[in-house]
Structure formats: C-alpha cells, structure tokens
Amino acid sequence: MAMRDGDYSRKSSWEIPMGDGSYDRTLREFCIPDYILVSGSERRNVSHVPACPVIVFINSKSGGQLGGELLVSYSTLLNKNQVFDLGKNAPDKVLQKLYATLETLKHNGDNFAAEIHNRLRIIVAGGDGTASWLLGVVSDLKLPHPPPIATVPLGTGNNLPFAFGWGKKNPTTDLQSVTSFLKDVRLANQMKIDSWHIVMRMKAPKEGSCDPIAPLELPHAMHAFHRVSSTDKLNMDGYHTYRGGFWNYFSMGMDAQVSYAFHSERKLHPEKFKNQLYNQSAYLKLGCSQGWFFSSLFQSSRNIAQLAKVKIMKKGHWEDLHIPRSIRSIVCLNLPSFSGGLDPWGKPNRKKSIYRDLTLPYVDDGLFEVVGFRDAWHGLVLLAPNGHGTRLAQTSRIRFEFHKGAADCTFMRVDGEPWKQPLPKDDDTVVVEISHHGQVSMLATPLCRSKSMYDPSSPSVDREEDDSSDDELQEDWEERRKFGAADTFKYPDGIDIAQVS
Image (cartoon, rainbow, N blue to C red; front, side, top):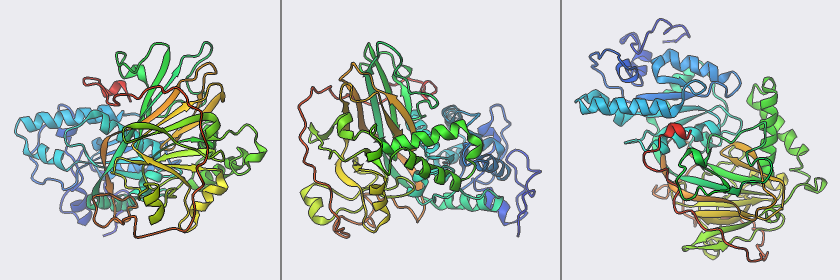
C-alpha cells in the first residue's frame, strides 16, 4: 500500500487508526501515549505495548532544510509530543520530566509505563556535535536503565552515525524513508562505548579574557567549570577551568583550525551552506587556504611539539609521549571514524603490536588511540588500503601541558565542534587532560564499523597486517614541572544537569 504525505494529516495526539493497513500496524510499535508525555493528560486504556517506543530529538537547523523536514515527518508519523526540536526544547529537561513520570507511574503499579521504560530508545538527528550533546546529557543524568541512542546523519562529516552503520550521507525525509529508519532502529543491536571527559585549566590573564574567541562559543560538550560546582577542589582561584566530554574524538592543531574556519564561515553566511556536497567542497577550499596542504607557505602554523608537552598514563605513572616535530595535528580517537568516516588507526601488524603494545581499536576497552598527522597529504594516506596516521599511543589518560608563550592561541575540536582557545602568555601551567568516564549505549546496524572487545566476531590483531611504517619517535624533551592529575571527572551528586547543558 502506497503512503502519501497526507495520509496521517488528520492524526491527533498518538492515536493512529489501527487496522487501516500495514503502515498503521508498523507505526504503533513506536508510539507513546500522551498520558506518559504530557502532564495532566487523561489515562486511557492501552491494549498494545509498543515494541520499540522512541523519543526523537531533531536539530532543525542541521542539514540545511533537512532538519525542519525531518521534524515534520516524524511529527506526522508519531505522536507529536514524542518529537522534540532541540532549538526549542532542552534535552535534559525533556528526559528528566519523562523519567520522573515513568518512575511515578511504575510506583503506582502501571505495568505499561514499566514496559515503556524498559524498551525506550532515543533517536537524535543532527551533526556529530548534536549527537555528542545528547550522549553527554544521557550520561550526566545518570538515568535508571538509560536508553540506547541511534543517530541520523544531518551534519557534514557524520563520523558518529557512520561508525555505527547509520551512514554518512544526509537522509531523505519523506514518510517512507523515515518509516524505514524507524524499522532499522527497532532491529538495531545495543553496543556499549567508552565516554571520555576533559578538564581544561589555565591561569586567568591579567588583561583580556580566556574565553573562546568569536564568532564561535564553546561547544555543547564543554562547560565553564563554575557552572558545575563552585566548591570542587579542581576549581582553583585565579584559574579558568572548563569541563566537558567526547565520544568520538578530541583533536588539536591544524585540522581543528580548518574546521574552525569552516564553522566560522558557515555562521557568518548560513545561506551558502544548504547541502552536504557544497559544505564538503567549502571545507576542502578552506583546508588549502589555511595551509593544511602547504605548510611551508604558512610560517604561523606550529607543530604540536612547539605548543605543548604531551604525557600519557602508563601503569599508574605519567610518561612523556614523544611527538615527531613534523606532527601538526594530534587526534585522541575513540571510534574508527574521523574526517568523514576514515580510520586513522588502521590495523597494526603483529610485530608492531607486540613491540609497541598496540591493539585494534575497540570502542569499549577503556583506551583511546592517539594519532598524529603532518598535513592533509598525510591524511590522504587513509584513503589507501592499510593507510593510517602516525600511531603514537593507546592510553586511558593523556595530558597536554602548553609551553609558556609558545603561541597566542591554539585550535581544538570535540566531536566535530571546533573553537579557538587563547593561551595566556604568562602561564606555564595551561593544561588539557582527558580521562575515562564510564560508558553509554549506542544502537548499531549490521553495517557497524565499531568493534567491541566482547564480540566474538571482532577480529584480533593477528588477522590483518599492514606493511606501512610509523614515523620514528626520536625526540627528547626537557623535564618540566608536573601539574598533577585530577582525582575525578564525575559531576557531584545533587547537581541539576540543567545547570550544565
């Protein structure tokens, strides 16, 4: 039976007329009734428990006009009260209210609400930054039985959706396509992935501000520390401290600088960035203009070794990580999807894996991969079979200690969201530190590229080898004063997540 866009235009609330066709029977498996979603709604008798109840969050500004079109399609197919525009509804408040209602109903013996709670799944449509925002909210709320999350690729790179099999091209938005996506969500498997938290601290400058430079603000993943807890011992007098997290990657250097230029241009001229193809073309042009391809022509570009001393945690102790002088971009990677779906780590061969203690990149092993790039030409190596960046380390903790007066600023990026971070000239204790912080549940299709260390089908390091060689790590570093590791990255109990996100 063909479905026209107007077939459900007369549908009100959540009640789709059952028995009118296969689409009706399919869609009722995803709908949630109003008495659970809307305060004060009348409790109605519900005979059918949906197999896959969903809450949908959509960034209506993502993907040009696609975000708005998806908002209409999902609101047409489902109960409009289970579909939320992130431009109008804060996800933390939505989920707090929903889970409070579910807990109250369950306490009062509502078995239907208990089943909704157990089966609930989240769909988030937007770019990588939007998806990471939702992952952070779910983590911070510490929900009982937190729902797994499926991602709709509405951004430019779409690394997060691609890593779990949801594709990297912007989707079509007609009702049939959305219905097909809902079916995939129902059939998707759950996969745990590691969460990584960041603390960034620097001394307050004597003049000016440490805040990121306009036209961009800090991404959703980063928060001024005083908004979390003014009494935390990490919140030191005379310092600006920020805290945040990532699920795909943190990067610093030239790649983040190009990303910043792209996002700045898009913010200034949003009318030009209406489709994914144009966005990717503009990104490439900016990469050339910023010197990512021709570094020798841009003397202002610094390598990572000039900017910071890098340390990793090994066997309970901080050790210097030697960075070749040619490396101008460094990436801390959690998922095998970067820069539009490329895998910078690749598959280490057996001899190197034994000698350098390297493994395949599992998403739930409590480790992230540290990869370096010289320039964009180096990045193009990823397009070749067995291509990879410069494998630097695998670790559960890393610290960047910036050299005093090395630069006025640097560029950083968290899950697709970049910013330009000023560096005080009079401070030699500027620190960025990354540490493990729990796990979240993703939804994965059969096309998922991410691998779990607990999945018997995941390949071992012995099964595939590459013949390419890593850069030699030969540099010596002068001893510098250690700053001291943070004891914890957990938000204090009793802190309202609405004060964070």
